[in-house]
Length: 379
Image (cartoon, rainbow, N blue to C red; front, side):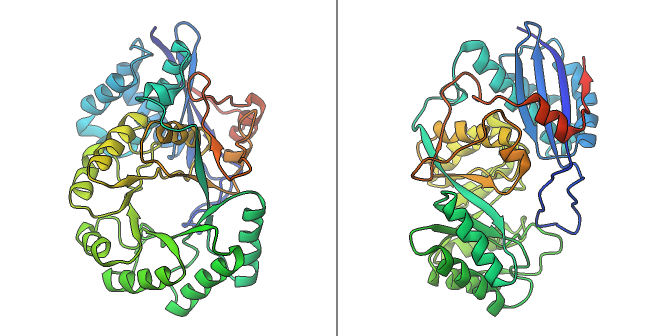
């Protein structure tokens, strides 16, 4: 079974606000779907947390290495792409595009073999996983509390709050937000905080992060994410050693090799590869097992689409220590692209699909709506 065509589909019109809200509008395109079709008519779907302009430029470079290649050997084909583009895209937009291709090839392999991706990744350790609602801090506190209570009413039992000016004003404001959250949801809900240290010109360093970690511990926060600039590995080593809460980071890293020093040096308690940027499920699985051997937990970064969520679900199925998946909300690309939207059960868990491939069916009409019918074909 060979690769016959690759298609990229931009998502725009309902792009959710991010930490970089002053840069992103709903009409902007920062998420791109990938479809890989075989010469036997099977189609696998993937997702890239990168604009279609960059994805399409990368696919122009990659098409000659992809068309006619095996459609059912995701790891080998993805590694080939990494190797042959070493000088033109190592760790950048080309790696991001490979991520979407890799996810789509795993989906296609699952459909070809009649197996769920989680089983193909090595075996199924669990059939459900707890999602955490991933939201932004907001002001004033009263409306923020109301929003969090709404998430609990929807069934979420874990919530991560981030960005929204946290760490950019003063310690009193930061603690007010965290106290408001805890009082709004009670003690039974798991709360995490994401400072957003990968934001532009992040001003805070180790001492701020350590002081803030102690404040978060007082309010029962489970982990503290991106407290420092994303390249400050020495600062993270110190922070993880001395902070009273778990420390997480690494969502901006790409390629498995970039994670080695972070894992070997125990710079984080929780490592957060994003399969839509890091190189796909093939790279994410290697990172997760390397982390497991060092006692570091993997929780996928998932500020993307329902396709990325389903990829994360299958990775969580195939890892013995998986605890959470990220669930951005609200997001039309998460809740309104598939024929059946993700649904939480009574305990606040998501069921991991056991049907072939990712177990996801995109709704063609909804995809057309959020892509304005734009499809770029490589054949």
